[in-house]
Image (cartoon, rainbow, N blue to C red; front, side, top):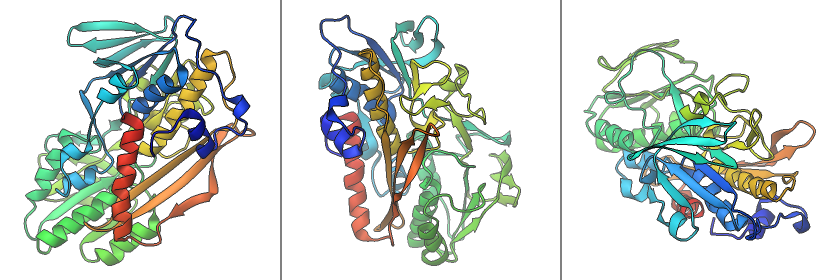
Length: 421
């Protein structure tokens, strides 16, 4: 998506049916309200950018421990060596220089919801940042199985960066007649198509570069959770004899030293063991006691504002929230705009938009030259108070092809620009 002004975005996304309902920018005559955003991924970067674009006199501080964001989008192609890590490494300079976002490089470690401060550990020590609204976008944390899991030996590569590089090196070392074993966590998890996409591009790599190799996919779910037709065709036809797909394979024990994984479907070993554990909200959300949905894994929020059901001025967006929407980069970007709009309205004493719509799209490479895609919108249901999937908006590619592969890079670059530029 190219850069849009607020009105254009709301028109396109269906977030406002009446332009008269748009909130005004916060007056420059007032003391600047303070918004602190923790986490500089697609959700955090987008909400910081759009509050500054839409909010006028709002002081926005982005807290992020890393100097840049390494995107999970396209990262599977880094694993196979098709693109470089530099292509998915995105800096924060535009947020600071173009949009006036304050950047604090540090790790948010604790929240005082009564005093409305967040403690941040920086290289110079711990500082307390006061806020009027706090946005948490820390991504995911893991719930590993019993046993001995060493991420330096058994990478997950589900948080892009050093783990991506490690898995790339291990894949390159798979010999002829070798086996690559990977797991799919129990839903919900970050990026529903992602594990199946990884299985495909790894199988494509081994098919082209090695002889008689196998990719074993151990899925904790009863079946493929995203694009079942497309990935089913890929597993059963494109990679017949290479990919062995095993559903209902819940991981019960992991041993990195022996590259052994025990599941409800049996015990497996391989030259590479790519273990992607079950997931929960990022540690900051959990430690603050905000993982309060029925499972105790995710943050229950009001989808009109993404405010926590415990503390409405603390908003949780992206992978950590529990609205039932897909945990994807595109969805985090979409939720961030709803959240930004709601915060600007709240700072003006106005009610949130009563009819928000969010969207998620994803392209998945199937081979080194073809890709598929999936798209869906969600609409707020005022009767249930939930975000409901708009069935007429749901669509997926009829087949994987080269045009989709090229479009995938256009989509990704647009996402990068809309969130970070």
